[in-house]
Image (tube, rainbow, N blue to C red; front, side, top):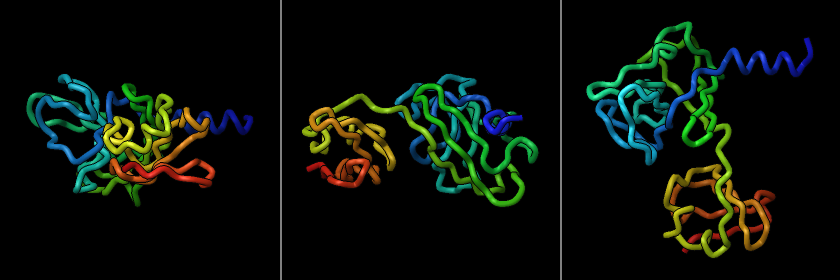
Length: 177
């Protein structure tokens, strides 16, 4: 078996079914609500990576009452550290890590965004404006945006509207005013 085949097999074996959205903050795990800008319907799968209590992190099924964990994310054999989950609405990819054996509601889970869809190009003036949507809507550490004014790729290390944008090579920055 080639190296590429082994890597592809490992990824496939450690990838769960997609979630519709990933929460960007702590949620009440009950009721129909809007998450990350998307109105959820009963039965939608949601990745919950930002709970204050990390033992509540995981994949949930939305309902009008209390949400339940996804059937592929509630047993000790369902998930291992390094498992990947795609997010269909935003074309993102998340990976979970934890110590020991997984136990739903007991194990503290840490989720890392591995891949995010590249945002549409914006101007340097937009990056410098703390009220522009690129700075105020779903801004997170690691977000990359093409700067169309200077033909360069910018990345941020903070989620605040005033968090600076850096050229990917670290050569310059723009701080929103």
